[in-house]
Length: 46
Image (cartoon, rainbow, N blue to C red; front, side, top):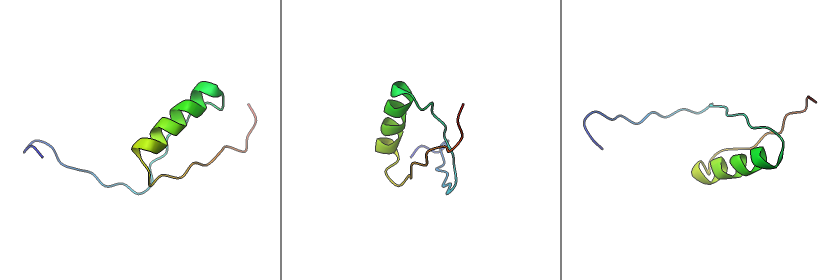
């Protein structure tokens, strides 16, 4: 790593996506980048 870069470890970040096809595709892409993540679907209706 470069001297101006430091890694940050976070255990509880949240990212929200819409529950449509494009939001589901974005969530799958995020899961590929962050395999340790867990997907939680919102229980609320819009």
